[in-house]
Image (cartoon, rainbow, N blue to C red):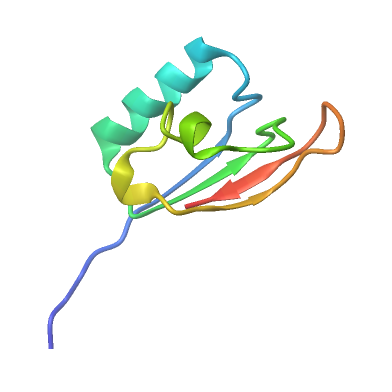
Length: 78
């Protein structure tokens, strides 16, 4: 039997539409290397593979996403 540690990062990201925010999220994820991430307030209605690559390291893809309602909400779990 092997023991395996998992780490979770939950973050109210307050919008991933700005490249500066995506850069910040990417830096934090690469530094902390979480097993699971949960983002609230993505404020994105759609997240393409191209967009996700701007903030999610490859090991955290694929992901599931609940779109925002206008400029509010949006959840992503990877």
